Amino acid sequence: MHENRSSPRKQLNEHIDVLDINSEKPLGTLVNISTGGFMLFSNNPLDTNRLFQVRLLMPESVVGETLELGAESLWCSDASDSGGYWTGFQIIDISDRGLELTKQLLDNWTM
Image (tube, rainbow, N blue to C red; front, top):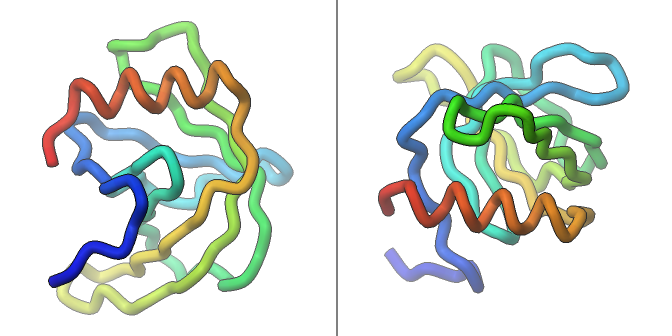
């Protein structure tokens, strides 16, 4: 399969939950991430073409840090084999520190 992303996503070595900042409700669990986007696994389908403000609950390796960003949901598909949904996001707003944290995590995760 041909990779169209400008920065390849990496699979996580740690469990990271993602919250909707506005509602403080969980959106799902991070599956993979790059500096340009990420994919979530969720129990319920998420609206596509919608802007989200999200907070990633960071792993123990970066305790004391919060990663908040703005992202647009681009697609959502049924993960019937896993009993949930996959949703792809494009990061549209991230602070300089958030970008540093993302790069730090990517350095420690597998492809």
